[in-house]
Length: 85
Image 1 (tube, rainbow, N blue to C red):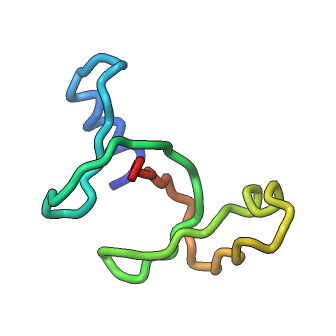
Image 2: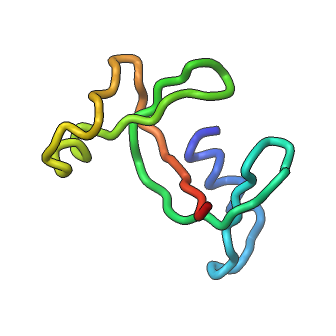
């Protein structure tokens, strides 16, 4: 899903701005958690179902340490939605 597709789906719901956003913990809906934050980052897909998060160059520079590995060349800018739990 792209950001444009997500925006279109959310706009189509026509819900008030104070509606909570809840994330499923897996595709089968075995658990749910409120959305904690949305951040940008780099994503390297391993297959159609999962991959690896990497910090952007700007995030790595702001951290001012070697905590995060540099994203590989095939990683793409993406939005990451982090659950509360």
